[in-house]
Image (cartoon, rainbow, N blue to C red; front, side, top):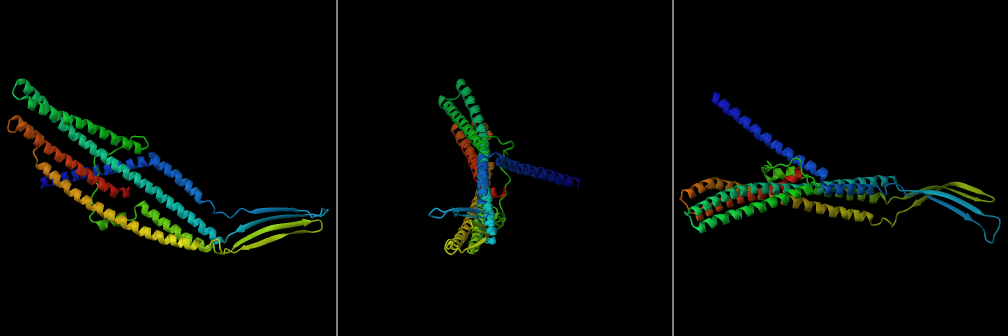
Length: 398
């Protein structure tokens, strides 16, 4: 009984360690994205542009400027009499026009906010893809490092054997060429690793990330497409921007209806000449019969077009997510199969021992080792494709 309790306690301890590790990796990803938001120069430029556009949306919300007129009139032929007029007028639209115009401006601000989030999602998605590429290059370089070390040890051993006269120059040269090729591959992989790192620095505004996860994330495939799409259907900023634009068009319809109401002008006027001095208020009415004739129709057609585009975008997004989920499921299956094949394959250490004992020839050793490492490389490539596919799905959750 005590043994069972100890085993159970050990399992709980190990489970807690795994969960804690996953939580740390997730926290590191969020910290990476937070750094990206602070330092990415493209997002900073977009933010400034959004602020400028929001300021532009406030133009035209106030009434027209008042008009002041002064008329100084003298009779002809020239006499002593003259007339002097003063006037000030203010044109006002119907009060509901100002309300709907302000709401349209607020709706345009909401569209800009969603477009900013859309740019953020694009940058986050690009960063996740480059980060996963960097993780892949690290693991691949480590694989090539081990492979190159084995090849170098083999070449050195064959050189000693050649000097002792126990093998031919052909076998010695095969081992040397094999080691040289792997060393070159290792060096080229180092260049790729540096390039992916520099790309991450570029995305982070020229600064290195303070905490960059060095392993693939613990992203889990959704149970079903229905569960996944219900979770993220309202996440994409592109779709939210289209929803916000549709609301703007609907408000513009209401604004166009309000602008068909008469405009009112009020003012003060004074007329002076030698004998009389007239003064008083003035009123005017403007009937918008022709100026806004097609404004309402235009807003209505824009709303219909936006609804059609929104339905199409939603459908395209769902089909894309379904395709990504199916692709991820297939890649996960391939990854598990390759890992099982790798576990069943002969390890390089056993191959080298068999070579040293003379059980296999050098050519057989190189062929078997090549198959083993090709299997490793295929597994790394499959895992990269798998996680990059998941990144296209999970980028909407960050």
